[in-house]
Length: 280
Image (cartoon, rainbow, N blue to C red; front, side, top):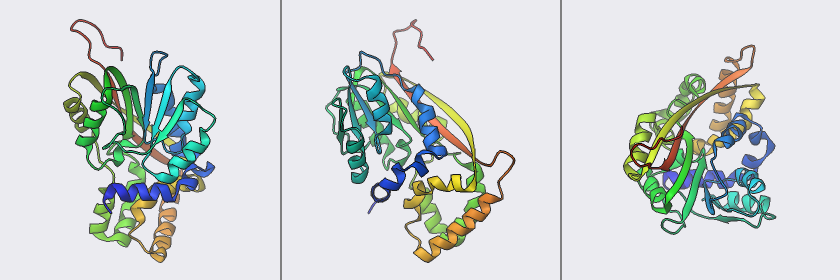
C-alpha cells in the first residue's frame, strides 16, 4: 500500500469519528469553517468542484447558498467518507458525490468553472501530477482556491512531541510518517502552481492562526493523524498517546493549550490582459 492509499484507508476507517462533533468542534473544524468566507463562487458558475470533500460539510453550506443555479460535485477518495457525504447532502439535488483524487479527477477537460479544496491537497502523493490535473479540468475563465497545510504547521505540537514519536517509532518510521504529508513552503507552492497553470494568475497567501483549547479539546482531532501511527502496535500506541497527552499539558497557559496552524492558500484567477488590474 503506497502512502496515498494508507491515508485514504485511514480516513475511510475513521470516517464516522472524523465527521463527529469531537472533530468538527476541534481547532481543525473551526479552521475549516473560518476558511469558508474565502470561497469565491458566483451565480455565473455552472460547475463547482470540491476536491477532498470529506463528509460534505462545506458542500452542504454552499448548496444552501446556491440552491438551483450551480451544480456542485464533491470528489472524495475515501469510500466511507463518500457515503457520509451522500447521506448528508441527499436532499440537495444540485450535489453529486464521486470517487477520485487530485491525481486523477473524474472530470472532462476544461469543464470546471470553479475548483476549491479545504485542507486536503497536502496529502497528494504526486504534487506535479495533481496540479496538472487541476489545470486540465479548469476552463479558460475558471478560478480556484486551494487551502492546504504548510511546512510550519503545529510548531508547538511538533516541538513537544517529536522526541516522543522518535522514541516509539524510531528515525526511519518517523521520517516515513512525516513524508505522508507534503511539506510545502510558500515559494515551493508558488513554483508548483505557476508552472502547471501558465494561463492563470497565481497568488500564494500564508495564513497563521493560533487556536487555544483544553487537553480534551486538543484530543478531539487526534483521529486526523491516525494513519500516521499505523506502524505502532496497540500497546505502543497507548504508551505513545499517554506521553503525548502529558507533553501537551505542559504547553497550557492562561488561554489554554495553543496550536498554531500554517495554511497556504493558492488563489487561482484568470490571467488579465496587460494593464488590467487583478483584485487581491
